[in-house]
Image (cartoon, rainbow over all chains, first blue to last red; front, side, top):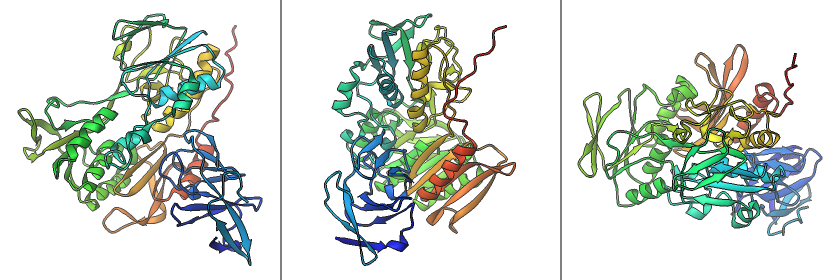
Length: 107
Length: 401
C-alpha cells in the first residue's frame, strides 16, 4: 500500500504520477472517482498521467491511444495491450494505491 | 467492390486495411509491400532502435492475431511498377498483376539521396534495413559521424549517435535548421540543443562531395572545408514514391493529388500517408498516416467523396533528452511567445521545458512544447477546436442545373 497524496491535493479532473517501478498514474475523474493504472503507455514511452482525462478514459499525450481507467483496456489504436489497474483507497484523507491488482478490479 | 488492393505496407497501408475491415469491407484484400517486412513503426528507428533499447519485435505495428483477423493476402518484398489507366490492375515488379476494384495508394516516400552515396559508411535512415545497417556501423567503436541535414531525422540521429559516444557533426545548408517548420526563434532553440548535446553544428554551407574510394573518409563542404568522417548519414528529406504511377491517369506533383477526402481523379483510387497530397498539402507525419485512412476508406467504399478531414497537423521529435511536440501550421511572420517555462541561458530549453504559442492576427495558430506534455495537449486541443475544421462533414452535392 503506497501513500500518494492528500485527497484535497488531487482535484477532480487531475492526475498524479507515483514514481514506483514501474510508475503508476492516479486519476480523480470529474465525478470524483479515483483510479490507478500503470503510468507508461503500452504503445510507446509516454506518461499517461500527463494525458487527457475525459470521463473514465485517458488519452495518451503522445499518440492519442486511449485507455479505460476502470479496466485498463485500450479503447482505440495505436495501443493494443492493456495497462494494469490498481486498487485505490482513501484512508484518513490520504489517497493510497494497492499494487498488483488484477485487471478489472480498480476501485 | 470485391477486391481492394493496398499498395504500401507501412503505417498508412496498415491503417487502411484496419479501416476497410472496420467499415465492413468483407471482400478480398491484397496488401503489396516493397519491403520484405510486415508493417513496423518507423519513428523509433532513429531513437530507441539505434540506441539498442528497442528490438525489432517492439517495432511491429500489428500482432499475429490482428494480422490474421485482417484476412489479407500479403505480397511483401515486391514493388508495384504500374497502375493501369483505369485503375483496375496493379502491375508488380515480378511480372504478376493484381486485378482489383479499388486501390489505396500508400507507397510513402523514399529518403532523398546524394550523388556518391553508394560508398561504404554512407547511410540514409528510412527503413528497418537502413537502421540495421547504420546500427551495425555504429557498434564498431567510436566513429567520426557526419550528419548531412539538420531536420528531424538528422537531429534525432545525431542525438542518438552522440549518446552512443561518437563524435558528431551536423551539416545544415540553411543558416539554422528547421526554420520552415518552426520559424527562426524556435529553430535557434533546436540549434542550441545540438550544442548542449555536444554535437557540432555547421550551418550555412552545403555539401560539395563525399570523399573516399570504397569507404567514405570525409565530406567536402561548399565553403572549402573537409570534415573527416567514418560514418555519414544523409538526412535531406524524402521524395514521395510516385514513379510507379507515371503514365497512369493520376495527377502527380510532389505526391499523388487528391481532394481533402483523399480521393484521386479516379473515384476507385484513394491515397493516404506520405505519398498523398490531400487538398493541396502533403504531410510526412505519423499522425496524418493514421488519420487519413478513415476518410479515405469511407470515400473509397462509397465511390465518391462523402467525408473530408483537415485535422490540425501534429508531430513530435525526441532529441537530446527533450521531447518536442508541435501542432498547427507555422507561417513566416507569425509571432512567437513563450507562455510557460523558459529558455535557458544557453538558448536551449530550461530544465522544466517550455510552451510557445504562435500568433497571427491576434489568434493562436500553432503551439510548440518541449517537455510540457500536459500543457501542450491542452493547447493542442484548444487549437483543434478553433483551427480544425470539423473532422467529418457531409459535403453538399452541387445542384445540377
